[in-house]
Image 1 (cartoon, one colour):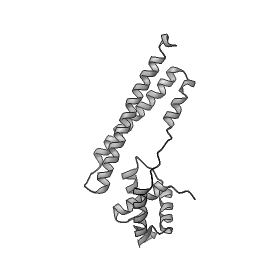
Image 2 (tube, one colour):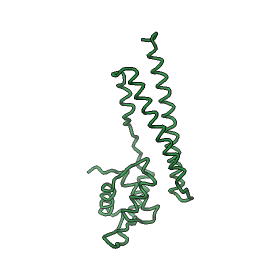
Image 3 (cartoon, rainbow, N blue to C red):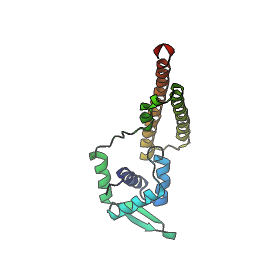
Image 4 (cartoon, rainbow, N blue to C red):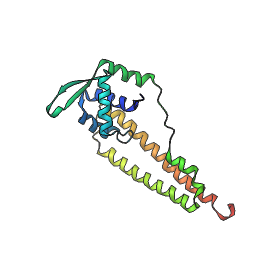
Length: 183
């Protein structure tokens, strides 16, 4: 069975960083730290916790009221996390719906194509503002999650800034292509 390996390793990594946590605490930390780069639903995360337990990578450290379980990483889980971090080549994401649509924008009127690009640029501007607000709202510490979280956030900001610059370039190219003398 093919598993969501990144979710598996994200859960292991957070459990190590948090020195153990309940599923609820882990979900909240997941949303705070990784929600902008990797999403997971409650059912996905709890399912992964069950699989990690069954595989011997985590164990229930304690049980509280209403069936609340706190998990901790086992030595086998630490070994799996280390193996994944250092030995498994990362998968490069090759799907980008914006670029896919761009390939087919010739099927709509030029003003519609430019409108689509402008809408994407405006949506990206809003995401950049939200990311800046999130960055300002986080109480950055000196712990690993803060340090490496800042690195990931900087990647997000730079990546979005590059895409925003690219949208401006695309709009210029569209306008140039659609001038009357080029038709």
